[in-house]
Length: 331
Image 1 (spheres, rainbow, N blue to C red):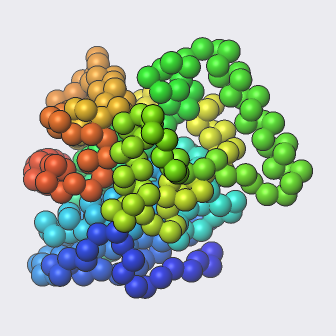
Image 2: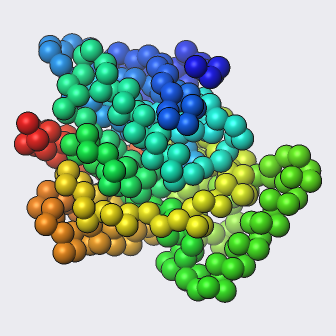
């Protein structure tokens, strides 16, 4: 195993529940990278447990939103893991602060490998939850991994779409993409010359007075005690500037109409990212014979970041009901 260092102390941005057991676990993906995860399981249970792998948001760590989701689902009777993606958090991988849609899908698949081989897990009842940019990665994983019985996509970004087209598709032109390619490749030259990778910056700080509302929402989560974490890219220096090379040259969700397993896409009605989830849902069900087990849930009045950690807004009852219905149906 690749050597990793991880803390055993509770350093999450949310309180620990007394109704679950918690421990750190590690597993290796097919690229040889060791992933570190927090495992949450119910205090009391009988028989084999259904399991869930959780990841996201994009640029966050497992001590933030994904851990909150995983712990909440463990309280509801699931064995859950929240993992750090390759190159981030406590997981391995060099160079740090890079991403790749191929490797990140493999991260999800390796989490399913791990869960499928636990003695107290029913390997026929495994689901995944992806938050923000990892919502798109979860949906992309569902396109390839037939072991998944239900996929929950929360406050989704399509990272390939926003990388190639900009926000609200306002940069969807050959010229705009060419200029992005020039900039990212010039940076690659500088990084090689300087023998270091320049960071792009996390959430902007200090916050400009004229910042858009969704930027203020990100600041309120990542830069305040509500969600700040020392290992979070978004809370600190961000991704490497060149980390987006693969996403700029890739399109996710091409095969989403062929997903046979169940998918629930949840989005806040006031989220700036709403169009990502809505369009992904409509594209997934269009002309698809597998549309019957796909759902879109719009949360009235909710913003993008509300679905990160606001437990009174996140529809955990619906998430549990959807997963249980579809893992039983799959038997």
